[in-house]
Length: 108
Image 1 (cartoon, rainbow, N blue to C red):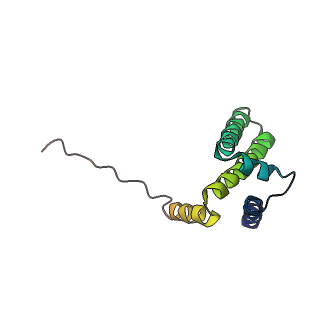
Image 2: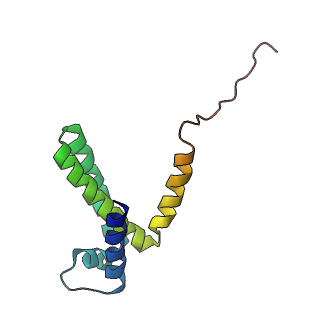
Image 3: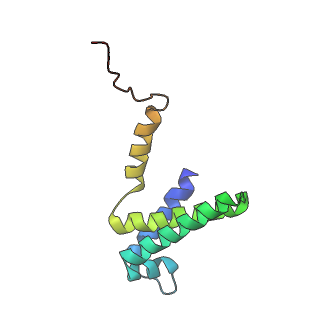
């Protein structure tokens, strides 16, 4: 799966650098950040609705749409997959480590 995500992200970054007529990705870059953010919001809402409707097929498709639009946002903002991967790896290393809450001794 990582190869698929990396391959898709490379295509997205190439579209940002080299305009291609008829490309939806190029259209998003041309319209700018506000359009990209609007699409991310729309896809997120559609994903939530699909989950609420308990429709796994639709949910999976909406998740893919959201991931794609997030990649467009990443390319627009200069965020690399390795940036995301690094943070996720740090979080993976912490799985199972609950934060320790400060406990006050009210008897003293």
